Image 1 (cartoon, one colour):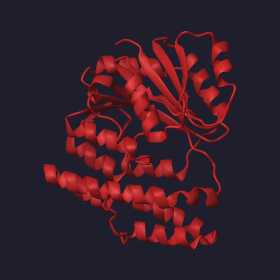
Image 2 (cartoon, helix red, strand yellow; image 1 turned 135 degrees about the horizontal axis):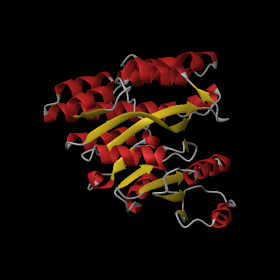
Image 3 (tube, helix red, strand yellow; image 1 turned 180 degrees about the vertical axis):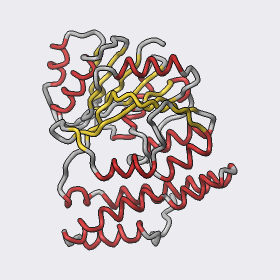
Image 4 (spheres, helix red, strand yellow; image 1 turned 30 degrees about the vertical axis):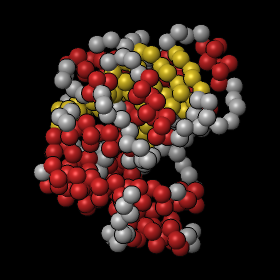
Length: 302
């Protein structure tokens, strides 16, 4: 296996981005190339900062205009050149063994199309934490990952539709497996799950290994700011799962269709957000959460 393309779309906090870049440079396996695609809208010192790194393995590109999450993520896929790639979050960090872990796993499982290695969650200050969201993800939805596991087909699709237990920024994809696929236009919340489902439908294989090598950052945010985007989030999730249910029924994956219609984790998420909406007296958000959690939202077809 040759070098890994680490694609890093950037939007916001420059200090987090610099931490992410340093974590790539600190890898104990040098077989990587980093491409940062800056989609921010404000001027910054990043071009000079990257020039000062003087590292030919690091490339910095800035979009001429803001493309948005979906188009910038797609650009990451389009610009990758090596056999494997990861679309890393600009606020996340690699542990020093990430590249080595991925390369060893890909060599051990040559038919793997996606690799999910071990992930720990960090807060805004870099402290390792165990938020409720992640405890639920691991204890309720995720399979046993204490030993390596190869997963595929409808069984895996059902598992992911019940609750997407993967961490997208940590996933390493075989570039050839994504040929003719891409991020579905119009999605910003579930675009990663959609890509995974498209890959699995045509026979893709996911390998899960327990080796801890990635830090996924969850930001603290006020209740009001968290609730501000709920309308778009849950509308997108609702429409997506209904469309997936129809498609899974059509191809004969009936258990997957049932899991998509239920979209359990999305409903539970809405329930978890409901107390904050109520205490903040955000009536509209509270009503939306209730409708989504209990399945009373009317389908919105495009």
